[in-house]
Length: 184
Length: 236
Image (tube, rainbow over all chains, first blue to last red; front, side, top):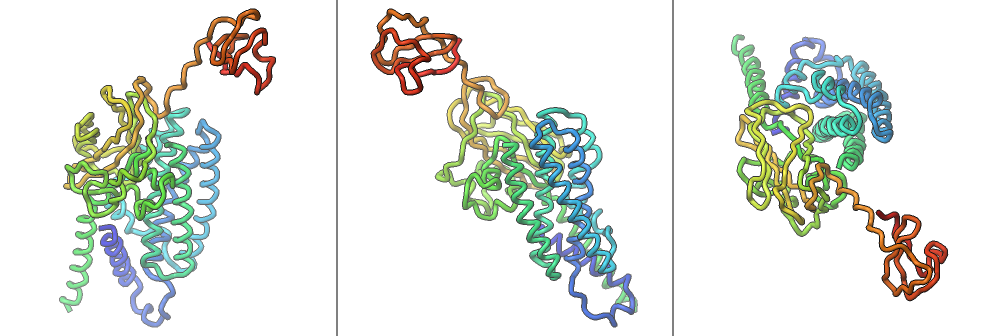
């Protein structure tokens, strides 16, 4: 089912891209990347945005220093990755935000996992209750990154982007292991 | 000419429709604490679990099953009781915490032990938040047991399944940690003139001491780590 969705999104992007480009596309050499690569990078940016807010909240409000340390560490790693992704999309002349994301959120039940209302609810908590809820939200959010990465490694073609995806798959699953041990 | 325009438009429309149809299956989640079997696999506490380590949130199958994998074709490892799933020590009231990766409209959350439903929470089709917790009473059951949880999606035929292995004490503790053991009771105060055989218990300086062999006139705490009196900690 997920593969069908990814294929549908990719095909939609392809069609939309085809509409916009017009005649000049025919003259250009075949690009070294495909629409999955573009979609993966755009969706990772969209994925990092609410995570940045969540991690900032964790850095500020976590009770346990170990939880605070996790928030700081992930926040730094994510900021560096965001820069890399932006630079690549810009060098390809592709937008940083795709119109396909609205559909993607619909596909995930109509609401993004971490909307402002959820973050506001979290910010009202303190102590161990905050820490557990923060970690649990973070785990759920990070599973989304693994899903995106595995979509890219299945059908992306740009070597650097595929490499980013396989590293994301590895590092995020290691993070999830660690986070699960902290809440379990 | 018209046909050339119409075809792509229809294709886009068809793709959009398939996106919306694909939507309901994207609801995902599992119990992170106490750790469910898929959480044990995803955190590496149980090895060789197969594909479940990539997506512990995807144990999805038609509603109504009492199997840990929901009776689907994937993740049969979750049904394998010979895997020595670690059991988490808990009291009579357990808080089950769900990791959610997609907030799908929910009919009910159900909890079972040995096929008996011990708790149900009706969300009447509401969408959950980014996390979900339920406090469940185990109804006096004690010992080792497997709790099966079902998250029933409101507008599809599917549910998400999670089995949690527990070691249940009789206490009323609400958390996932066992209550700390009470301090040992003190024995009679030590007497310099009394004769103590091996195994005898006395109290001295607010601590409990056990004689390792026959002794008389040896003051507890002065005989060293390997001496006759073994320190058993503070007592009351």
